[in-house]
Image (tube, rainbow, N blue to C red):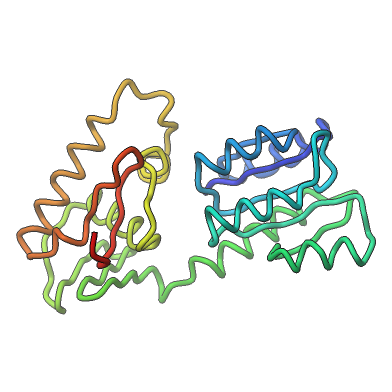
Length: 227
């Protein structure tokens, strides 16, 4: 799971990053609005931890940007201000929680995990899109209630795309989610393209390839909307 941490206090940033990384989260970090904006525009995050008082502006602007680009991201404000007006402003902008500094790293981790449990509590890993149903735990796909043959990797890719249905998913995010590695370490996307071609072929054999759409310059999307 990917977490964005925006905090200009280097010591606090390191403690939060170390706590979450040790628990298995992939963390991107920023100390400024400008760097955080680049991360938000180019990557999808499950959780964003945002300081409000940053050297080049207010973290409130980042909440607005996240909501425009990734509505499903859970936002936790971490601020030195305990003022009620500050909390209200953050929550009115659709932040999900507000923690006043100094923070306890374990408390933040528990909040992050609680948000993710609620977000991904989907009928015991059941993902449904029209006539497609995936049991991710059992790695089984049924189409029109008939079992079909997909590889484990194809099932995981399709479930990931369905979890973000009707929304373009970046190639980089697919690689990081499915293979648990950074796309920056790859020379090319040939492995991803190969698996997507096989997945498209399996869907085509079930007359469902029209659901899998290539999004030019971005990646892929599962959608039943007309192009």
